Amino acid sequence: MALSGAEMLVRVSASLPDKTGKSLDEWVAEVRKSGTDPLDQRAVRQWLKSEHGLTKPQQEAVAIAAAKDAGWAEPTADDHLAAQYAGPQQSLKPIYEALVAAATELGDDVAVEVRATFVAVNRKRQFAAVQPATGSRIDLGLRFVDPPADERLKPAKAPGQSTHKVGLTAVEQVDDGIKALLRQAYEQN
Image (cartoon, rainbow, N blue to C red; front, side, top):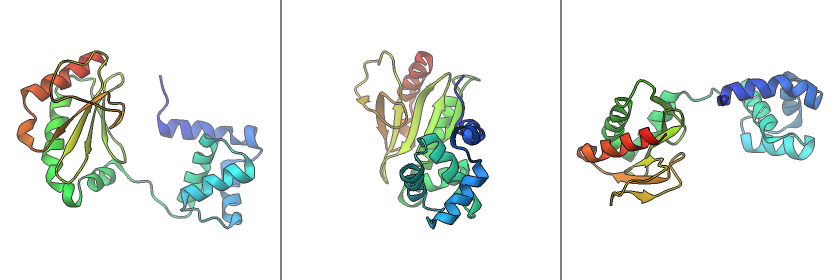
């Protein structure tokens, strides 16, 4: 089974002394001494790569720990969802809620995971993703092994692991046809 992002960070952090000669706390102290802004993740990662040759997973573990040490709080799922449906996208929230409700009715094995810019809907693997695309449209991404013939489906590489997507502008569009597409993606994954 694949590790979650948090589990991977724990594993990478634990391996730092053996692989780099310094513990996570020692790396955080190095970031502090470097003068690099610990809240600037990109700058910290670049410094860790260019000055110390750390791998991407090591850079991520140290950069996140340094940012937390400097007072940064990791956004929660609720924070991400609020940001996705703020401002002009606020009117799209009922469409999101209808899509998630339809997806979770497909089976007890459906898991909804809020990410920074979209919501993944998983079974054994991701079969759908919901993302506000504009101020007036949500994209429902679907992952198909064998895509059904449906004129609303457009080839896609996002959101998430989608192979196809459908743009929705009203909650009424979450109809039996959309629910059937969700079911087919669920069954294929």
